[in-house]
Image 1 (cartoon, rainbow, N blue to C red):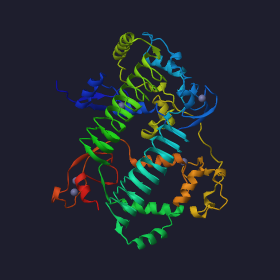
Image 2 (image 1 turned 180 degrees about the horizontal axis):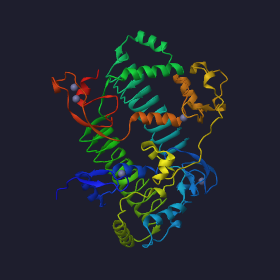
Image 3 (image 1 turned 120 degrees about the horizontal axis):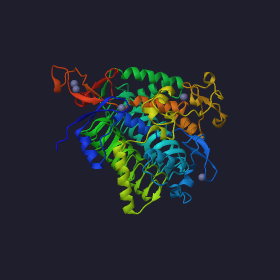
Image 4 (image 1 turned 90 degrees about the horizontal axis):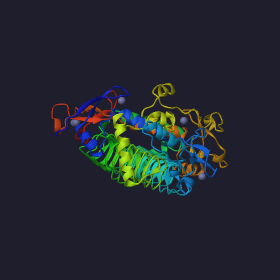
Amino acid sequence: MENKSQNVVCQNCKASFTVEPDDFGFYEKVNVPLPTFCPDCRAQLRLCFRNERCFYKRKCNNCKKETISTFSPNKNYPVWCPLCWWSDDLDSKKYAIDYDPNKSFFEQWNKLWNKTPKPALFSTNDVRCSYLNLTADNKNCYVIIESSNNENCINCYWIQLSKDLIDCSFANKVELSYEVDDCYDCNNLRFSKGCYSCLDSSFLLDCRGCTNCLGCINLRQQKYHIFNEPYTQEEYEKKLKSLHLDTYSGVESFKKEFQDFTKDKPRKFAEIFNAVNSTGNYMTNVKNNRNCFHSYDAEDNAYSVHAWRGAKDCVDCNTAGRGAELIYNSLNNGIEASNVICGSICWGSQFMEYCVNCPNSNNCFGCASLKKGSYCIFNKQYTKEEYKKLRAEIIEKMKQEGIYGDFYPSNISAFGYNESSAMDEFPLTKEEALKKGFKWEDTERGTYGKETIDWKNFPDSILELPSDFDVNKEVFICTECNKNYRIITDELSFYKRMQIPIPRNCPECRHIKRFKNRGINKLWHRTCMCNKEHMSHEGIPCNVEFETTYSPDRPEIVYCEKCYQQEVY
Ligand SMILES: [Zn+2]
Ligand SMILES: [Zn+2]
Ligand SMILES: [Zn+2]
Ligand SMILES: [Zn+2]
Ligand SMILES: [Zn+2]
């Protein structure tokens, strides 16, 4: 039977949303009913369960040593340091509960969740690192999130196979760079976005293969260019020197100049390359991806963010990769994870439903912190036959109640809305969040008014720091939010080596700025704004339509692929 699209009213926000024919196919494949929440409400609910980068110090409830955790110390859950959590000390079956058909599934799940030890942070195989979460195989890194195989990186988000980075996000094979976003195969790049194979350059936007360029946009395979104009090497170096990019004032003033320069330059409707039959933004080498944001080397995914390296048939996922397949309404699954429904961090696991922090397991339902589990429900061990029977019974009841396939209710989340990734994508005030039934965390992170630095009397240039300047003794104040922050020794050495002024915003404000600059994960149907004389639309304005994250009220000039390609240099 041919599936037609169907309109559904969201049970939460009451907005109407469309279930597409392709969606039906997927729901049949994983055997879940149609969702009753719209894609945005589904994402918001999932994300309020993920705290990626709000860190606290608290004691490990097992070894009693102080550890760094995403769980604030006022939360009464047992939280174990990574060493204890991964050790044989953790026997999560000890906390098992019997399923009671007369009680609600989520109420029982919450009971198990409350008493099972949670990992303070989730990362594996990181060496000489601190403040890392959702990471693997990093060396000598500090405060990096959702990243793997990096070395000597500080304050970064989603970086892979990179080295010597500070304040970077979405970087792949990038080295010795500062403040870059969405960049690939680059070296010595600063204050840049959307670049591939660029070297020794600063302030680039959507450039390819450029070397020694400054303040350029949409530039291809060029050397010694400033504001898209060619210079001789000598002129270029002279001009570069005169800008004093080693000073705070020099960087700020060039930033403004570059912003003005890019205003009337066309932008491509989406940052997508080799994206066959796909809608979304920030995608490379993808096929049949619908409504996906930040996805690469992946196919047949929908309504997902970070569907990467081999992700296939992942729907409603925030982070699915490394061969993840058939994952629905879930957070952070990878390393050959497959057939996961409403799961979080089931790395290397198969046939998992409503399980959280259960790596290398299979055939589990409603489990928490269970490593290498098999045929368990609420952490209790069953035989294969018993498991099959009870699982079917629970699902049948959940289907009758219309909750099977829905993510956990927000009041079960361990995190305040303001600690969670939902805040990045769907920012709310405390009042709004509480009104919508989310939690809020009042524990204050960081300090105010403890600064030892007065920016008014601070040297403008990194080269003018006094020789006895001891960064470990200094407390900085963010010019944006007034919060105090510190700079670690390795960070200062990097700024000195790169001749970059010390940032005057706290790491959090820097992260938020970069994220804002990427735009939100939402698509608008729009028409190409080109009215130039192009072959494809001779004598008339172009009318190619596309899905773009540039909302109609944005000031950017947005072009279709064809028109954009004719405007690159
Ligand atoms: Zn909704
Ligand atoms: Zn411990
Ligand atoms: Zn700040
Ligand atoms: Zn066009
Ligand atoms: Zn055109």
